[in-house]
Amino acid sequence: MILWGSQDTAFRSAIVLDNFALFFTQLFIGVAALTILSSIHYIKETKIHEGEFYALVLFATGGMILMAAANDLIVFFLALETMSIAVYVLTGMWRASSRSSEAAMKYFLMGAFATGFLLYGIALIYGATGSTNLNQISAYLLEPASDWPVYLVGGAFLVLIGFAFKAGAVPFHFWIPDVYEGAPTPVTGLMAVAVKAAAFAAWARILMHKLAPFDSDWASALWVLCILTMTVGNLLAITQSSVKRMLAYSSIAHAGYLLIALVVGEEWGGLPLLFYLLAYACMTAGAFAVVTSLSENNRTREDYSDFAGLGFKRPFLGMAMSLFMLSLAGFPPLAGFTGKFYIFRSAVLSGHTPLAIIGVLNSLLSVVYYLRVIVSMYMEEGGAGAKSWGQSPYLYIAIALAVVGTVYLGIVPAKALEWSRISFFSID
Amino acid sequence: MTDANLVPLLPAAQVWLTALVVMLLDLFLNEQEKGFLAWISLLGLALCAGET
Image (tube, rainbow over all chains, first blue to last red; front, top):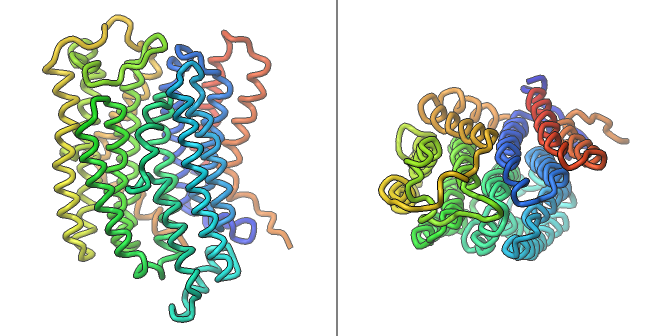
């Protein structure tokens, strides 16, 4: 807590240390710790090289921390690449699995494609404003919009596309299901939570705050992106037979809910965005930890049928997974409900009521596939053998921590809301 | 003129330093001892969390 409350800059304001950056630092550290705890047993079984695995998780975490602190487009790009390259390698680290290698190759190619958009966008913005520093760019944007070169808006749109790609927004989401499914499950948890949170952290600082004058230009594009992301994510999640793949589509749908906060702007959307990311981190990291616990002897057990009877064979895992599913669906009094409540409330208060209605309808739609997991666990028989399922105490600690977070943020959200508010409004 | 204030880089640098320590130790530990690396990683993260 030494650095909390600092307002410092380095390298000519290219990196900033404020409560916003520290909020995300804590979030990334928490998710990385849960990933490591849930991997200890898993990587021994899958014969993934331990030293490289942990080092890459840490390199990726460092990249995410720098992304949240970046106040210059070049520093942001370097941080993004530091994170992305480590995650590409982590995705393909399960060498015995051809799905893992395929996922790594797909992720690398699609990631490189997104990087291209982002870099062209940065180049155009630099060409128009003469700087990559966000303070100087926002100072330039105070000039009347009629004085802006045409390619400046084009550059901003390319950066928006790059962000949408990393956040997994529709129609830039095609890589997510295959990559999430093929990657080692603890890495999928890291990608679904921390990589997405890092993209939204940078999105909030760069697009929502520093490039806010573009709001009128991309408002309608963000609306379409938001509605498509929620709806397509939920509709495709319903049709899945694999829980891991369902969680991948669910993460797309949740990116849609988070986009509502970006659509409503920084005045109303800042606090709900940060709080929702916190809630989403607990419930999604926990859900992936439960999926990890079902892996055995180099085999993954990810289908709904593998969850049959889990609630009776492993009561703790069944209870935890039920809580995560109910929270993701938005049932009170869990974290997902509180997060969605504040997101939809911000939409209504800022005059985007139709968006809130579409969000609520989508949330209802999601109940179908989240409850299906609970039905499998408690109302079906069969599934995988109970004796040899993951017994790692560290994995259970990770799941227990996620359960505590999910329940705490739902029942006593006041402190986390205040933390989110202070953090968001520390952006200068 | 260079701004030499490195404090804003501290959280990220600390996590990267832990990663380097893990990679270095990985060279000297045998297979049975490699589980120790998870705890080194968690220690580095905990120190960074305490600081931020």
